[in-house]
Length: 345
Ligand code: 2NL
Figure 1: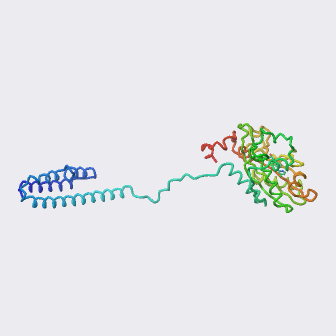
Figure 2: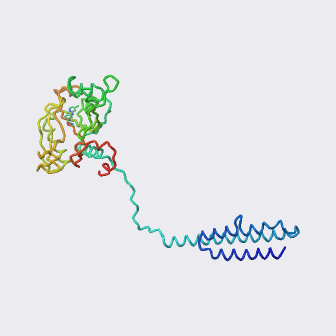
Figure 3: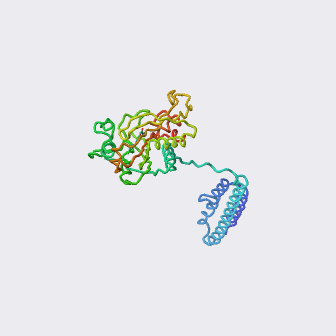
């Protein structure tokens, strides 16, 4: 083997070892690899001179060159491992895991304000022995109107107030009352106490005050000897649990086709506590629900003999109650799916 080439190999080995020792990071190390060990590096250059040697010298040179190459690659790998270990140690020292740090808060979902109101209302009634009764949204004209003593000429039955389907006599319920017919017919002649939460639909102009869909919670108690006193006592108890034990309550005479007599219940304004404000329109009172003694015709339609049974019923709108409580000025926010609204509750 020529001494010139073997000197070059030895010189190369020395230079690589020195540069490896001096390489302080991954970038410098990569530079060493490219300069000496890469496809166009110094080692490849020396080995490329093999064909120019005397054929007799080639095997010896090839052998030495390969040994040098292997040693250099080992040295390179060792230096790379050492640098990585040092980097890990440095990171562990400076970026150490502090298990006492509070965790990052995860975004937590929440219930829709209407769902919150529905659950609160149903919980109060459940505590008073009322069973939650769920019923269909798609109803018959008969159960939505006819059996509830709503006559054919009643304005609610107009094409422009009710969503009728293309199927004759099938519509989207305009109130949860048809569910009460289902409940009465299912349980008669046993006494019942049921509470019916659910979505209702009305074909109306959408404005800040009226939506085409909204929730209703209706309740019904049917049994022997149920009187107007039971209605008043039970509803006052509900109002106290819902709006506060100290709050005053009043009843005003009203009219519904399915109750007789009928009334509306007001509570002392929950914003100004009766002093008079813009929410209660200076009256000091907020209308919370409608109620009454179940009309004998409706009892009969439910399967109960009105000579033996009596009952009271009521209906309220959770969106309306939520609007009053939180001073929400536009009912359209409820179904607009705007997180800026929803995340406030
Ligand atoms: C309101 C008024 C009310 C009823 C609903 C009812 C149902 C049957 C029989 C008798 Cl099956 N009554 N429901 C009674 C009075 C009032 O709702 O303003 N709701 C938002």
